[in-house]
Amino acid sequence: MIKKKLLISNFLVIVILLLLLCCFMLSACFTVAFADTAQSTSNYLDYVLEFLGDRDILETKIIGDGGNNEFLLVEMSPSGYAIFAVDDTQYSFVEGAKEANSPFFKYINEALVYLGPMSYFIDKGNYYFNIMTEECVDKEDVETTEYDFLSQQRVMRSAPALFSMENQPLPDKTYNENGYTFIKDAEYFKKSYYFPENLNNDCGIVALFLLLGYFDTCKNDAFINSNDGFISNGSYSALSKSIAFAPKTTDSLKEHLKTYGHRLLLPGDNFAMAEKELKATIQDYIKNKCPSLSSNCVHYSGSIINTHTNPRKLINGGIPVVLVIINYERPTDSQKEKEGGHCVIAYGYKDDTFVTHFGWEDYPEVYLSKYTAYAYYALEYNGEHVHSRNMMDLLLKYYCGCGAKV
Ligand SMILES: [Zn+2]
Image (cartoon, rainbow, N blue to C red; front, side, top):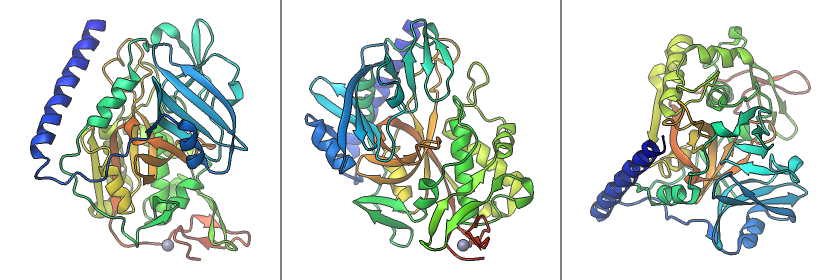
């Protein structure tokens, strides 16, 4: 098993080296979009305070992963957290949020184990306890001891962006806030608190129904047929002219998307998805449920090369992007050669950091290093806007995601 893994990683290194060579040869011909401003700093406190603004550091703790990797967890008051990968004297930002403490916070005195974004565990001796899903995983089934997070990060940082021409945020489809570029309707995701439960490896499905709710509410009311019971009303504040909470997509939409069957082959009742599965599921959904929209839908996906530039280019065009995140919970059996594939939705960015919805109610706005993403999927709708009636105000008047009273 170990030999096989080494062979795979050697192969990957060779591929990356070849890609780097190509990049070097082609660099005279192509403009590499966006400067690579790695958020490595030996003075992480400056970065935390700049990132989180007016907050106090409540607690810091070094967390392991059961192997050789170390992470620094910083919890803030009154809210906020940041997690850094520790590389000798350097700290590389991995993830963080301003409005919430980390999933670890309630368990700060326990033996914490961090297996990358969306993978928060407690070491219970014989098993790991998954804090978010409350599932128990046999230690023997999680092979982390050989995983080198920092090497992986270096590989991701050196992945070239060969064919990305620079583009600028479109002023009518984006807005700028504190230096971050957001898609025009980012509020939909920032205010998405309610949706079906996100169990282990369900996050691909969660990302997709968040997307469908967004397209139905903000782009065209035909994305979700109101007779299907796939979405329930959100709340709109007529006073502040903003979304109070976004419409909720339902368990029946979750189950419906699962029936298309595009999932990675994982042990158990998992529904992990990578970019191909995400794309195939949405294509099937549109074909079956809203075929009239298909000629106005464009699908984008890719992996490794350009993962770090193309999502930003799409956000510049006002398009939210599902990012597939490196996940190194790797059960030793059949999952071994498949990346597990945690998925989040990116709807904003600044330099190397995406602003994402994690698919959990307390985490609609998480900052995430772009080097944790290895693939992406995005849907663009370029047809006419058709108002939805997905939100109500206190007077029971209906509103569209664009803010129009309908
Ligand atoms: Zn509208």
